[in-house]
Image 1 (cartoon, rainbow, N blue to C red):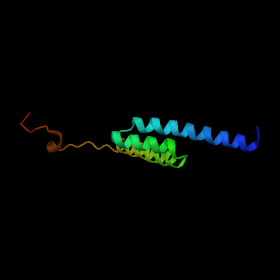
Image 2 (tube, helix red, strand yellow; image 1 turned 90 degrees about the vertical axis):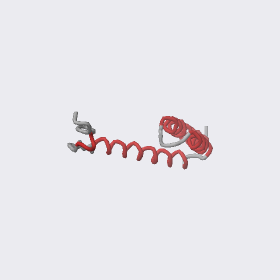
Image 3 (cartoon, helix red, strand yellow; image 1 turned 120 degrees about the vertical axis):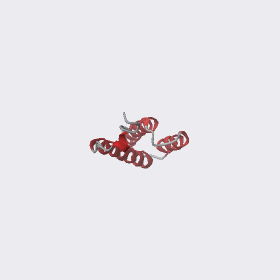
Image 4 (tube, rainbow, N blue to C red; image 1 turned 30 degrees about the horizontal axis):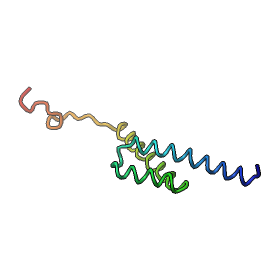
Length: 89
């Protein structure tokens, strides 16, 4: 094998690995509707690297936002938010 063949093989392998990982992430997320998932999967497989990397960063930021929300949960002691005391219970 020549150096150019090895380079092409490596590029294709990396693209397929990234595309498979991205497709699995797109399937598992609740961020997109079914139609949007189909379009994003198609673009991740057809457009080498660019769309897969874009979806990777977009979905990574989505999970980071949810993690930050969980860390900053505030408990409330107000009765109107908890429903306690509404009917005198």
